[in-house]
Image (cartoon, rainbow, N blue to C red; front, top):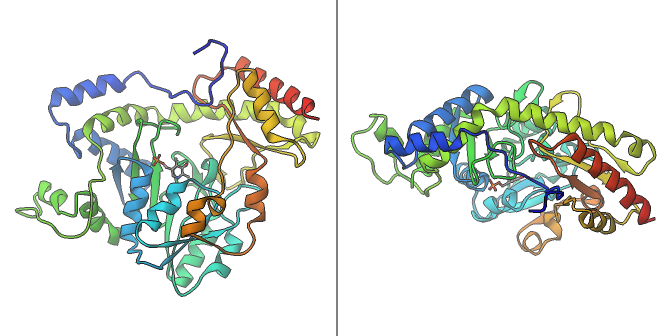
Length: 382
Ligand SMILES: *Cc1c(COP(=O)(O)O)cnc(C)c1O
């Protein structure tokens, strides 16, 4: 890679990953649920306050487990934003569920809790809030609706590790929560994830589903004298090498988060005058949310040609990106999902959003360069 290129993401290694992988190798225990997996589980349980944490091989896998645990049957409806990653929807579609897309809030780009109730039908089974950019959805309101209508809440907290809502960890508030350790997230293991179980009634079945539908976890704990096929399931657990890598990351989770937050705040300061000049809008973090600086995004004022801005930045060796193509306007979303009400905020904001490079080790000089090039790019597209 050329020296002057600023990539969008640069996976951060703490330096201890290979050491722990060597330890796992030395232990001679490579299948899942070995000593490193246990350490990761304990860390997640302690840190988030969830009832039970289970490593998975991705957040996608955690969402798929959640859909099985929620007992989604063909035709059951699941309320979620359209403005999210495909796995949020796909996990439920795999079970015959129907994603019902509801619009997002203008401030946080999170599922608009004020629109959920009107989207509920007799077929509704679950609500899936997605904590975009690691900033929490309005969980009190969402949990209240869920309780009144007897629905499950599955938090897609793929981006939300180390973030809190009113002091509670994201992923630990709904009945279940799902984390991602994909290399583009804050805490990584290449591919990886975790399912957080908060409702103790779901914990035993979760272990069985994750272990190919068997009670092998209970067998290993000596709770049963042999293990057999009990339920549907699959192989959702990662091997020990992945858990060893992840352990090195979890140990440094606080430092990684602080480092990202420093870069996030620097962007926020550097972009203030562009917001005052109505060129863009900066991210909004509600007072009751502590975020993890997963992402720095900005919303260009309408009328500015986003593609021209992105092209100009790329020609200057800065690699910003945009996302998502809202699910309701994708072929899969049209085939498998349904829209409730207007999605005008989703449609509007998804076309104006740019994500700036953000990773541990991004320098002040790089950030200044990025913002200067952004300014020029916006001016030039006129
Ligand atoms: C990254 C992401 C996922 C998928 O995570 P994987 O670990 O890659 O499966 C799901 N939902 C959201 C909101 C994400 O950002």
